[in-house]
Image (cartoon, rainbow, N blue to C red):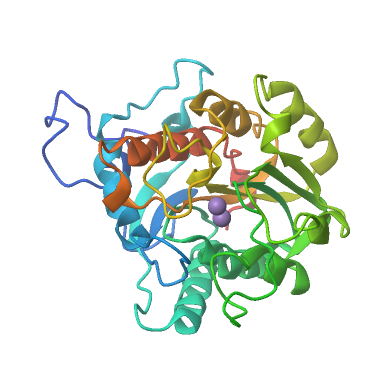
Length: 321
Ligand code: MN
Ligand code: MN
């Protein structure tokens, strides 16, 4: 439903019970086009890019289901996104479950169409392969973008099983294609075992700032985000958030878990710390409901997507044609 000013509002919990009705993201209206929207939630259900446990094809649906508790006002930051942004759920981009390269092309075209309408996508994944076509679409619209990448993994492999497209390669491909400006790129939360001691050095050598998980342990990430805002400065920024950046004890529903990860509090600090950046879109990827025994991983994902909405910049209406 929309208010008197034409801003869509989540369906209230006193109008329809939270366990009832159609489970769109945040119980927002479902839109068939991005025209007239500032921000659109869009699902990319796919898992043929995964390397271990699959199941992220069910991520968008489960995130929507766990989003029904979300209310419009952010009681911590004061953000009121539905008073300044026109938001809807755009449904899912149809990928090809038998062909990853075709899926990548479908994702790039789907995101490009959303961007062409002047709408910023907040993407419900889906495995992390999707970040590659999304970043290509972003660069086509905005030029090379800055990047905040939160993940247990670097996802800068050259190939996996001989393939150049996979959920562990998107940021290497995006840098090679000139879609990401490496001097405006940061990675947070990297950890775990590697194939070689220099596994995190390919992107460092190109200018990425890499903050490994151990540097985050036991501390607030609010000061780090202040540094990152200074480093990234003005200009478009894309936020890519892999749920496996969180510790598997709190977010078990994912395909490639690594111990010693971030807390939900640190995840909130990272996303809230993006306020003031020129965010042009974001994703929340790698939620695998078959491993999400209590639904907590999808619940966290839904909340983090809401927090992303809260820090999306207000568009300049005078520039809207
Ligand atoms: Mn990843
Ligand atoms: Mn990961």
